[in-house]
Amino acid sequence: MRPPAPARSVAVLLALVGLPVPACSTPGSGSTAAGSSTSSSPTSAPSSPPVSPGPAPGTPVDQQVDAVLAGLDRRAQVAQLFVVGVPLDDLDAGDALVEDGVGGVFLAGRSRAAAADLAAVTGRWAGAAPGPRPWVAIDQEGGQVQALQGPGFERLPPAVEQGRLPPDRLAALAGELGASLASAGITLDLAPVADVVPAGTEAANDPIGAFGRQYGSTAADVVPDVRTVVDGLAASGVTATLKHFPGLGLVDANTDEAAGVVDPVTTADSEQVAAFGELAGSPAEPFVMLSSATYPAIDPSAPATFSPAVIGTLLRGSLGFDGVVITDDVGAAAAFQDVPAGDRAVRFLEAGGTLVLTVDAGVWPTMADAVLARAEADPGFSATVDAAVRTALTAKARAGLLA
Image 1 (tube, rainbow, N blue to C red):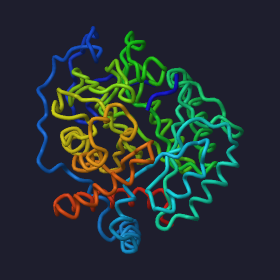
Image 2: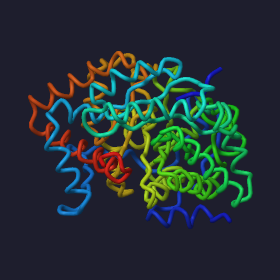
Image 3: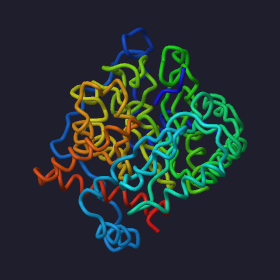
């Protein structure tokens, strides 16, 4: 989502995830990207994308998930696949969502409320949930993307400035960020940005570089800093989210405000894809957020959000990620307004995704109904929903939200 008005070589980084070193691309002019592709051919989409296997049967986490699943009817299971927007200036609106069993709430907007006051609300939600405790999610990156700015929340510099800090200072900042969010009952930060914006293209990169949301201009710069932030959040029990896979560092338009955003440069073996692959394997078990742009060199047929090639073949297959995959906003974003609301959720889950994020709370019942109807009519899709629900609940178990 858009804000309001010791390094290693790339070759070593890419080798770590078993991908070939790509040739350097030359930034240039293009309607939607910073360069042109000279790399591999598009990856074809499989008919049945790999799904997250979850924990091995019989483990304590698996047993905990089984016990919770036994107490949820089908609608309650599907509700666990949605994170729904609640305005920060109207937190009472979250009560009905939580009572309806949504998987999480996203605090949208900006607030100068104190951490203690927010904690009272999030604590109320934890007690009111009829099933698993909901995620409480926020956009807390730094710079112009810092939703919580009241007492208890230090002002954060933008990521581009965080990336210039000495490693020990960045670690301290990340630890403070995690502690402040945890003190307010926030359990999921939709950060940090792992996109790579090449040097000299920042101003033209509307969603990321123009706002200094990137940690560096190469994967070797970005990976250690993003890992530090992920670890700092995890130290306080806050789950991080790596965004926006397979990367928004080469586009020049923002999917929140424009439809048809395309990155013709990024391929399956690009350095920003490799960066996500390395970071997604963190023991801290971050989520991965999908970009809403289209990547013709990976899958020309659909935006990444709906692409089995991006989610199933590349992220879950080649990169081996078996955790939670979450959309960027698919409720209000311009990128999806020509797609019926229910289809947005169904297509994402079909492609191998886990959690649907909609800032617009008004569309989530339509989305849930569409998933339920498709699952009832299609046994294959029903099994896909089963796998997504298990992945979602496994993440909650590991985060302590099922206890």
